[in-house]
Length: 136
Length: 135
Image (cartoon, rainbow over all chains, first blue to last red; front, side, top):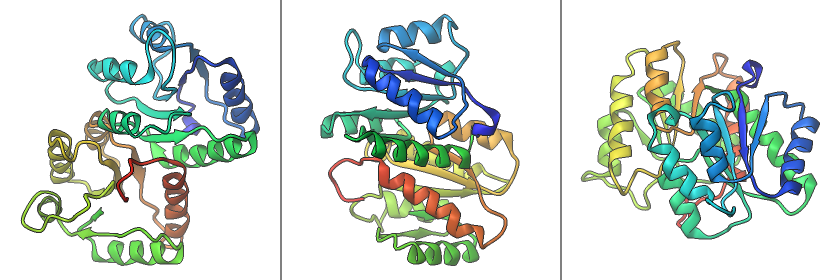
């Protein structure tokens, strides 16, 4: 999948986390175009107005201002155009209610942000291997 | 749970799980109707599986039907479904992706690659969180 370099949209309000994802992508040699939205409202605007090319993968934080990840996901899933996007939640929220909501909205995975960058790197490497296994 | 009508695949999956030390309970269904019976019918298993692997061949209709039924059933809709296939069938792929599967995956041709294949899947399952019920 990564060979075809599908577009990835990161929906994340924390600048340090955005930087960590970019660094982890670079270290794992993930060359897919990466676009960033700071919250759910911005992500929906980007998708609805084709401000970014249609992503095949979204990496989604949960706790964000204006519109959180679950609200964004609920609205996104209502639109047929975005139905087939694979969504991977990456969050610090270990709340069961968030996991239940996310899986009910059919995310492909719910990942807790590891505390150390080394562990984060390793999680991103695992994601890369999984993405390479998948046809999108 | 693995839904696969090919006995060799079932054996090699069981073998890969054993070699990789994947300790999770693995249920098998040889057909979509058997899978449905295990999920909702007389032979209902408990707890409901968190992950289902559906093998879809060229005529993927019954696998896609099963996926539809899972997504339309409130108790089952949140299950993580991976579709495994050995055929190029765009229609099946589009239908499965529109039903929000977690991955549409090409089955390895060489049986030796089976271990690598399940090793990658297992690594992925290990980094994701599930709700507090047991997988």
